[in-house]
Structure formats: C-alpha cells, structure tokens
Image (cartoon, rainbow, N blue to C red; front, side):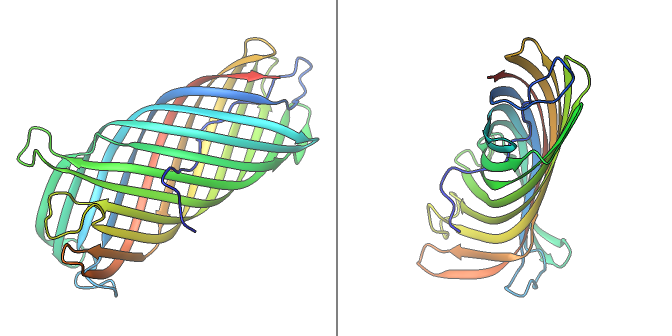
Length: 298
C-alpha cells in the first residue's frame, strides 16, 4: 500500500470519557487538545549485499534523543449505542537530537571505516489515526473498549553540521509507517472528580523511506535511496483526568512506544542512472511523550 506524503500513526494520549456524578461511567462525544514534550530514538542499517552478508552490517544510522514540543488533538464520537469512532492527530516539532553515521568492513560492527557525528535537531514527527470501537464491558465505576483502526505515521529526519566542517550538509531521511492496529482502553472512575484511563495497542505496518544524501555527488538527487520493509509496533499510555465542570475536563498523561521492522530492501540510485540493491536489515523507533490538555464534552 502506497503512503501519502503526510502520515503517521498514533496519538499517545486520549481524553478520558466524561465523569458521572453518580459514579457510573457514561460515554459522550468529546474533542480534546493537548501539548507537551516528546523524545525518542531511531535507527536503521543495511547489509553489504542482498543476502545480508559482506558484511552483515555495512552502514548504520542512529538518531539519538530527538525531541521537541508536542501538539495534538483527539475526537471521540458515539455513532450508535456502544459503537464508537475515534480520530487523532499528533505532531512533534524536533529541536534536539544527535545522529551517528557509521560504516563497517567486517561483520558485527567490526573494522569501522567511517564514523560521522552530526546534528539531528531539525524535522518533525507527524501521525494520523482513526478507528472504530465498541463498549464491550460497562460496569459501575469501570469500562473496557476494544478498537480496530488505521494509522499513518511520518518521520522527517535530518543530518546537519552547524558550525562544523560540513556546513552545507542538509541530508534528509523521510519515513512512513502505515497499517492497521488493534487496541484496548480501560477506564476506571476513581471518584466523582478523577478518572484513570490506560490503553495498549498492537500495530502491523508497512515501512517505506526515502533519503537525499545531498553532499554525495555520485548519488542521485533528490532521491538517493529508498528502503522498504514490514514491521510490528506496540504502544501503551496512561492518563489521569479531572472534571472541572460537566463539559470541561483537564488531564495529564504519558505514553511509550516501540516499533520494529524485519528485513527488507534498500535501493541505491546513482547519478549515472544506475541502481543497486542490498538488504535492509531493520528500522527501530522507540520513545515517549508527556502531555497536558483539556477536553470538551457534549
């Protein structure tokens, strides 16, 4: 499945459903907005040939502690008794982070032949997701909601060298993760004012990436190489909300994710028009978010 230019995945936090003054969990429609901070790590590597050999790790890129401000929104709508729709948008504006670029001549990261270190403090992470859910269990004071849906995630990553030897360096690596998810949400009414929500999701995704290594003249531009693979992802989140009024709630939450692909293909495009292929070993992204926000209910 081909991904559009803007994509992403999954919102880490969702607004709690409205609090009932009689200590019974009741669902309503809601719109929430939030902000906070997010940070994560990302890495990928390729082998020397299509069999994953010569060497098994030829080139490896790692983005470490890339992070920045978060802006997000969530919509929850009950279309029929017990049937629910949700939609999410989440973006991290990257402002911190470092990148390492290492090449090896021997297996298992031996015989290091290149070791570059750059800034990764530019770019963004953007995600969209939407799904349908069902209020499977509803008891006095707690509720369980399974969901199934679609997620689309995009990473716009960079390599720059501000104030360094490679002042003209502005290479980019753009990834997209898209696919389906299954998720379970649990809501617990702690009191008339406080509610706790926890969620867990499993994702199956197609991974596609394209890069522009702008200072390498032998590579084609603006697309120097492409990567493709499939992978799995896991997310967990927790959120505590406070009812200010029946219509206005405020909340604080935290989320964590870990996504990983299997082997795939890496296609290198050269300036002379030729193309070579090797094994894409894996891509791994993991990180967390902390958010504060407000929710409006009707």
